[in-house]
Image (tube, rainbow, N blue to C red; front, side, top):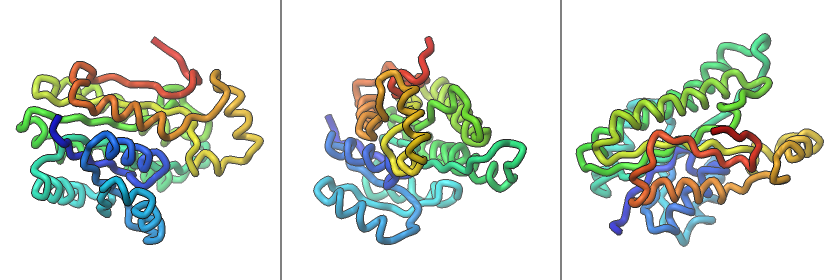
Length: 246
């Protein structure tokens, strides 16, 4: 199997970092794209992944032109961009009655507009080359809703609607588009939740624990494999049984 080139947005976040490392160890050439922000955070990520060959590229997924420039750079340097994982995401929680417009705009801009910005810029190259794997990291809360997260739930549900529509457009061109909907995982965001609330979350999960980022990453690796070409438009729940449906 030829070496595939993968870009992971939100690549140095809790889930993004695990996805980058899993893809790299599976033989992909990986570009982790994320906000430059705190330079020490980027340096720590690069130290942690030094043996994997992962490259970091600064990116604001809300900036369409910046996304276009990154795709052009990757294609110029590597000849192709074969795999895109949209893992960039933020939360700005609050009940709708108290939610500021800025909270709504920020979450929709990163979590949903960012998916459009990247997909719009990779899809032409993928279809022209006859191969592509796109995986959008959604959330169990996009399926169930969550108190105080009208913005986040709307963005994550919208992400899967986008996934299904794009999957239909590109299926005959060798490009698959799927979503993965994680439940509550051992990321910094979840571990920052007060312990008593976190305990209630764990109690509600049938398997009785939080997920591991590596478990999400293995699902992404499977969906991006060359031999996963008959799976498209799907939403894969990885939530410990927190939400079950047909």
